Image 1 (cartoon, rainbow, N blue to C red):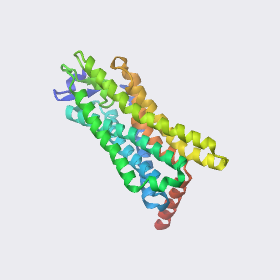
Image 2 (cartoon, rainbow, N blue to C red):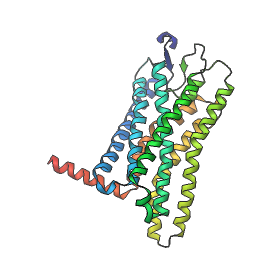
Image 3 (cartoon, rainbow, N blue to C red):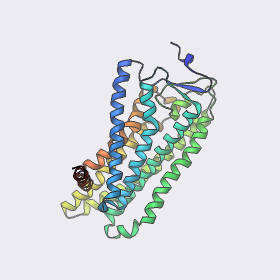
Amino acid sequence: MDLENFTSESELVLIGLSSDPQTQISLFVLFLCFYVVTFVGNSLIIIVSKTNTRLQTPMYFFLTNLSFLDIIYSTTNVPKTLKDLMSVRKTISFAGCAAQMYFSLSLGITECFLLAVMAYDRYIAVCYPLHYVTQMTNTLCFWAAASTWACGFILSSIQITITLNVQTCGNNIINHFFCEGPAYLSLSCSDNVVNNVVTFVNCVIILMIPLCCIFISYVRILKNILKMKSSQSRGKAFSTCAAHMTAVILYFGTCSAMYMKPQSYYLPDRDKIIAVFYIIVTPMLNPLIYTLRNREVNLALRKLAFRIRLNHD
């Protein structure tokens, strides 16, 4: 059946991840499970961080921001993806596509800068533990977190303006499961060399500046850890940083694979798989990464579960 029969002039068609009904059902169940784990896991981190006084520190303040961001990030894309997996009509309005693209990119950029701020927090905690409380004040933490959100939404506005300015010449079929920037740019029917170069440079800057800050922070952290005489202190320092580094590798690795390449290297099938990781998988893994390797969070979760069970009884 011709996809264009389902569309109007104001609609865009999303090809999706698969046209096989059985595969779509399997993906629906899998992604639904991932989304539930994402929502519940990140919500629990927010709750325990706000209710447990021992977790009301700068590290958990930033972790709460990350958890809240991951919930919104997943909600921006996953419900629509789940709906499309169960639908023959996989369309989205131009306004809806623009909004999805804008919020996805805004939250993605915010996460890049937030992970950089969290790396700096770990740098101060490990390298200057005696000055941690005086340097990482509540005011500094608030403005650092607010700046990451502001940078995300401001830089995204610039990039989305460039992306939506391309001429599509009536082409309205996007070979993706959501409105992703590179996928939308592939609709262009005109010579957009300047547009593509600007987009590529913006993406490199957005990814490389936070990544360089993270790299510098962790090089200094590693040097400081290796100087520690106590194996217990080294183990504790490694443990507090390992979770953050795992999240950084997962997120920046997949985002770099998607965005740090020229538009001519856009391959729909490969890029859709990469997008699944940073849109669906990574937000689900973040709460698992931080809770499984963090004794304080595990203890707080057990206390919360005990209180809930006690109240229920």
